[in-house]
Image (cartoon, rainbow, N blue to C red):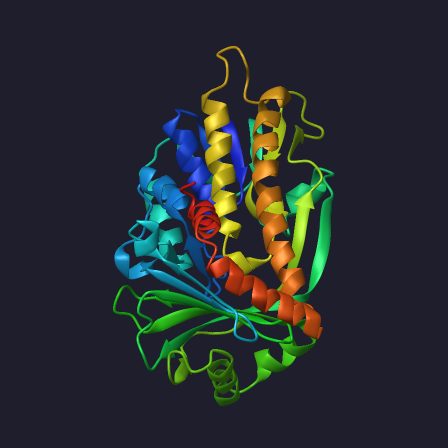
Length: 375
């Protein structure tokens, strides 16, 4: 007899694999569409800032990486283009860490290992029929377009450049971020555990400068990052390739619906297939994992008579996650717009605002707990 599935997940990234494990835990039969064996692999230099809620979720499916690949952040320092600065401290928040910087390849490996031991998840190379199809293919999803769902995009005049650096001085478990007068935003995210001296770089630069910095020799590139980071970690050496992608604010017009041409089947979007935001707050994957957690919760809590493809059921998920995405995207977009303005009045306002926020007490603690996933 042919294998039948309750859910087909298209996309085997972090969100797709996590969702597969969560659904299997609820005794649902899951088909996970993965690239065929032998598909070309590209070195991945990304790292994610994952909050306490995301850590708890990944621990619940036994996929949290070890300390060498999940560095606890004890402090965050955000510096404006003049003298404005905001500092966050784990001790002041009464927690062990503000966030954790997680290696993407290590996280993917742990998720794959967990899936290998989960008999209710079958990895397939082509989509299969199921009551519910969940699209987790990323913001360039072909399936989303095939389903006739529009993706409303507001492009930023910036691209992200990512790489890895070995630093002269240890990072001290501090995540650092600098806003420059030209609107570029540089972040150094600590890697390698508590005693590490390597960082993941996420550098948002004006799009007209991207080609130059991707082609620049290592000495020019690292010297510029040294100056942009105000020498915080001493001399820098590039230790990984450079990657780049355009930055945008985007949201799918529908996150759930009937599967075109397949009566009795429905779809849902999750992760970057449903939304995208500026990376300056490091919340993209946290929001995507929140999608996976909420969809699994909604399906598990459904009435016994309600099928997985019921659109009223799926719209409970859509309403909950659209509200969360909207709050976070408004915050990140507002910050990007404020720091992207070169006028002296805007510079004065943002630097004054950062200093005032740093001294705000309860407001600052509330915002920190929202970002940490503990509010």
